[in-house]
Amino acid sequence: MTLGPPSTPPDPQVRSWPVDDLPALEPDPFLDDVLRDEPITRIALPYGSGHAWLVTRYEDVRFVTSDPRFSREQVVGREVTSMAPQAVASQTAGLQYIDPPRHTRLRRVVARAFTARSMERLRPMAERTAQRMLDAMEKAGPPGDLMEHLHTPFPIAVVCFFLGADEDDWHQWAGNSEALLSKAADGGERHQAARRATRGRVVELLRRRRAEPRDDLAGVLAQAAAAGEITEDEAISLAMAIYVSGGHAVRNNSGSMMYALLTHPEQLEQLHRDPALLPRAVEELYRFVPHRNGVGIPRIATEDVEIGGHLIRKGEVVYNAYVAANRDPEVFPEPDVLDFRREGAAHLAFGHGPHFCLAALMARMEAEVMIKAVLDRLPGVRLAVPADEIEFQREGLIRGPRTLPVTWWPSTDQAGSSRRTRRR
Image (cartoon, rainbow, N blue to C red):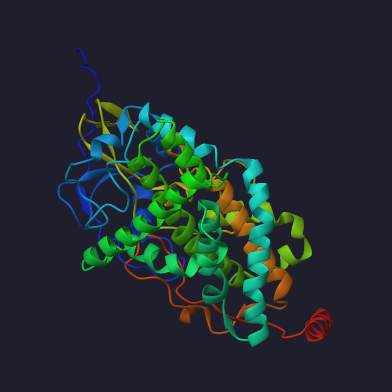
């Protein structure tokens, strides 16, 4: 008897994934199920049409995001099943929807602003800003809302300053980032108005930097546009994308990190005892926190590719679930445990491959600055209400608390006295 070549298993059944709002930092049960039972599956999302492959395992996500046979550029102009009724970022200019070599050219320009030295120069400003924002909160006395006083204004202030705006101009930008990342069905008009307002501010920054060159991001982009390395539209789109990720995303991620700390008192106390652990704690928090709902930008297979025994055919749509990959038990033992001493593989919260987030250095720095400022300035900090009463974002792509009410010992003397009593 002659055996033929092994056959490709049948394509998995298409699963409808509504991507509902979830409580607090609860992992998406849909992702938990498919990661366990069918780590390469097919899905239909709330908007668009058709279906797509969904990849959830750590190694498979790394493979798809680094293999040039999966294209983001081919998504442009194509109707695909998607998370939102409109694209968050421009599909005609920018880094998100392009492939090498154009992607390499644009990324090389932006990388000039995101260096270790530039982050070192930015950190003192970030530290002063965090302290100034907590001054008002401390002066008002407990309780206070960390989202209102720190996690919302701080990332906007930092990214606007990094772009080239005046440090105190953050409030003129803040309202637009949430609308840019809304997936609500009625969000189209708000989304377009926010895009127009943000674009206008970016255009003005670039105009100013052509007249008055500086080494901020607007200066780097204006210089590159003047030299013909990038177009004006590319400069605008790049600045807008960095503003959105550097403002709204950091706001929600850092708020979720603080919520995670406040609901894990042993880990919070660990940071009090060993402040040098903070950089490692931030990395573990990025892995642990489900930073987004659903999935992000898809890719299109440019030829037939086999992954995990499944044949993804040329032209088919593929999504990667970074959030699921960060909880892959084959890579992160006891993935639901927040462990600041965790060793091993790096998380994928900033993506992987050519589209790895350029702002990762800045986001890490901001998280460290905010957490340290809260621990230093608000002794005995703790939630002011039960954890299940904290309101989280609804109908957004990025998850995070809307409010984060906390209380603390209102003076240094009281804090010291309370800590001594507690230790007894």
